[in-house]
Image: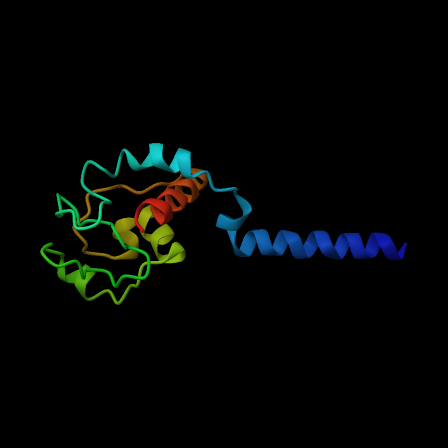
Length: 129
């Protein structure tokens, strides 16, 4: 009986952790994220020292303050957002760009599929270093 209680408690804790961190619940697939990035590369580049295109270069995006790449004309909303890009902020932004930073210039509807978003973030983390 005690073993069942422990197993039940463990399942509840695991379920709570999955709900609290949904990106952890999905195994990230950087190769699938590379395919998802094809939609992004219309506007963004990843190579170090690469020029901005329609959107800013994403090399070194993790840990960078939003609106801070030299030579790119950001919206005032992005420059003044106070956002620092990490897994959480990028996930929120990429799922709903206009909702996360109202007034930004990115003309992208967002990624609603959580697995695709998780995979894209895994790829970005690798490819933007």
